[in-house]
Length: 480
Image (cartoon, rainbow, N blue to C red):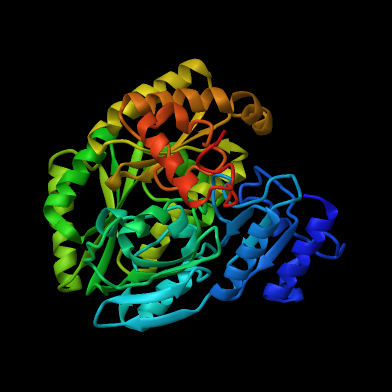
């Protein structure tokens, strides 16, 4: 893009959203790093401009201006992603389209159990809005204080309650999307049944901004549970954790809304870097699990169910010790420990992250084989294994050996570690991305682990909807 075209595009963008909402490097006092650098600080690009649209009409105008100039667009929400999928490249020609100003709740439909919200709404704010209206919005993840629902949908985010409520895809009934041509698909229905052709909603969810820009969504609401109880249990093996999951499903049924597993080393990092959190039971057990029971009857009923479950688990040798939260504050404290594992790992140093899914029945064998493989290949390597055992999603992360320079380890070993882990995932019929997406970090791995027919269909869809490859190029699919 030459200087003349860039100037014309910047003028058109300022007309579209107002001069104050177009940020560029021309102003030396403006720091654009919040938009140009990813959350993990793995990549730092340079944008032509940061454009902060405030309405769907403004998004349309921005997209049309960029299409006319041949400028690619990087849609961005809270920029909390972990696979470098929402920051610009280093060319200085891309437009970062921030949607955080689009943060209105357009309506709540109590009888239909839905609310329609704009893409820039922060997830935690939506949880609070639902709660004030007397409902539950169950999507919950560590970044909920800053991630946005548009980004959650673009990556098909998961979180801690997928076991009961499903990923973001299962929580969404309709979308509003601006296409690469600057048209608006108004699909904001609250319908749970609509068999009138292809499911475009599911096409855009999980596409990471490569097919269009999600500007609003109609999401499901649920009645608030009468009681919500949390337990923390120490288990002797991963096999025992999987057996405890099955036992919990039989005892609690749909009331089992969370089942997290945390390895001993992962919890040791929380204890080391955040000692005030007082991690329970971790020193004498290779794994701990965190269970949540949401009951529709009463707290007394929920507590009775939990106590019977844990009693049976003790009798069967699945649990060596357990703590049942006696208050909401205690429950929140236990969940805070779980959510602090990524922060503790960051405090320990740069690391190699994996967001994988494996059939639950095969997770113990996968962990035993892959743990041993990595420790043989890289002596002293430390494994930070935790995640959503209930739905088969592990954050199987790799930390440098103690005392080794973390940055040097990352630079020298990341490709090798990824190959070892991803090949093991493939042997166990899993996925190399469970809930974080592909972004640019995994785009070059995808052809090795995705069915070639599926990749061909994905490329055909991309070509049909975005023939000029202007929507978040280089993410998910690497095109010729």
